Length: 624
Image 1 (tube, helix red, strand yellow):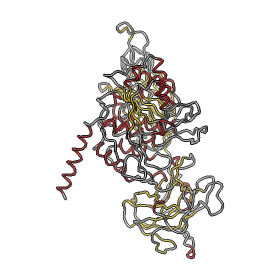
Image 2 (cartoon, one colour):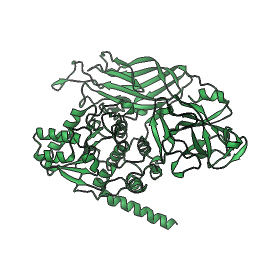
Image 3 (cartoon, rainbow, N blue to C red):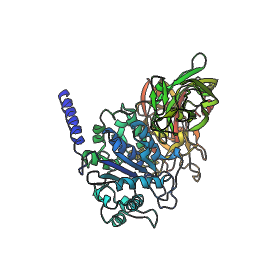
Image 4 (spheres, rainbow, N blue to C red):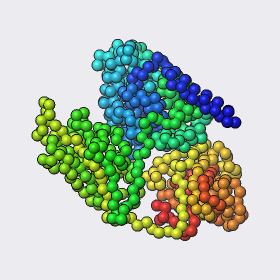
């Protein structure tokens, strides 16, 4: 067995080496541009209001392919949400922006090359047009066509206006989708054929095989509702690849589909038939120089304080919309390079886990004789306040300012923004010198710690979004659900038996063995009647289940009733043996599985709750 294992390892390593040197279509470290669709906000003027959600994971996976080969500087344009005339949505729900911003942060892309078409249409068109218009035989542009054609049509139109018509002969467009080329969302929109007519067939074109094979989980880039071929992402040692798995999970119908990533994989490796296993081998141990940690955990000292140091505790330095700062290690300060960035803001960020409560937060800044920099503090995306350094005659004089009564949750995004500034007093070359916005730390003083309600019990919550969905289960968004998401069964009723293809599962950790009661946060659609859309098959295959102390085997019917808001309930229906509560015995600590089978259509599940040593009437307030 050992010899076979060594041979297999050698083959995998050999294959990786081969594909890295097998680039397609004469690609040789040339410029790359990409445009994705995948809008999240509903476009109610179109027959299918929601955009193609495969781009939400595919945008992350495509950028991972570039980052693995350390070609970030070759990505000269990346636009997303490119459905023209579709509305913009809030950033918190903008799935493509979440994917692209996350990739920028983790893999060190140039944020200025990324555009949300719904909010930056003119800038996005101009960016792509400029890159097209500068193309030559020695400097071609490889364009990954991962969206509909109208945005590209408008960019080509602008490139021609710039005088770049002949340059379009050196633009090489890669496609895999006839749908993207031919579909229009408005009557006046254009197709790929219209683009070729516009440019006189100058743009070069190559179409690879369609990268979807969703009914064959281990073939190409879509495995349907079966996420198991991608578990290597979920379990990878590289945090950025585990994050990418979450982006794959974001697909709002519960599909593992990143098919658009196949185009870049073909261009940069020469392989038109990528699949989960090949992608795993390609990424190997991880992405070079990826940002491995984005969070810190702090506890209060005896004086109810803790401190975040600028150069040690703020790992995120690449933030879309801001210049990238540098670490002034001599002064132990974060700073902005004023030689490159004048009168603009830089920012750095960390995800902070700390005791929940009310805090006074004090920032320490360094005054500079050549300018008075301004500092902004944001907590969880909200600006807490803004201060400006005073003028000083002494360089690097320490100033402090306190932002009072700031609420911290258990986990928080802490972002410090700081600018370069000149007071016009210190000559430098033909102009004046700039202060560099240096700051050294944030000190947190807890003035009111949240007192957690004491319970003697143990509670395990399994969120719906942690399930691997199969069959006709899907994810859905709702601000009233825990974490903003829930799962819903939209298949046929299966009252008589469990249908294996309609079973979804999740894994959870039991730290304290014992007998747990099972409940769920569930909801029926508002138009359901009585006992409809309110039950599922439930099974804990690794543990012993009971109802009225009767040992149960396999799957059993579990039901509840609630409308409007998700409610905590749930009990068995054993027919002639009654409707007892479900209890589960976990004999030892460790990982266990739960399986939920589709039984009645349109049932909605927010989460499953297991608890012991606590009364049910205490449980509802404890889990919220």
